Length: 162
Image (cartoon, rainbow, N blue to C red; front, top):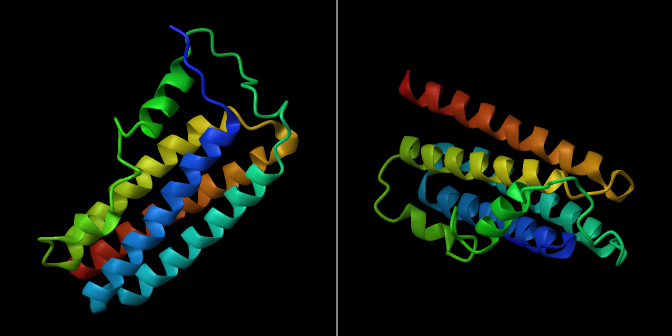
């Protein structure tokens, strides 16, 4: 089964993930003042990630847009395509809609944790398609930052419960 997905498409999805994350955090910050500053800080970091992906995407040459990874079964490409098509998480949905019906900050932080985990999973797959000279280290840095987001969110959830 041939799955085609080039670096430009992969970065396009990554950019949308970051836009959605920032939008979600800003909407949640408006609704939950107890965790407002944390959520605004996370939104600002997602904005930085977006800028990084946009810059990386702009620097792609036509050769770098071709898949350049050994993936004989096409598993990585199938996963990335499934994400891009909305089968794993819907990047086209309005992230603020996830807030409807949420009444406490803990629930919002749980949703945020899920968003961060989904992002990390996608970026791990993305990293395999980014050539070393085209910013693979930047993708690794963003993965580490998203992991920090999970730690911060977990820490805040624990603090709210105590």
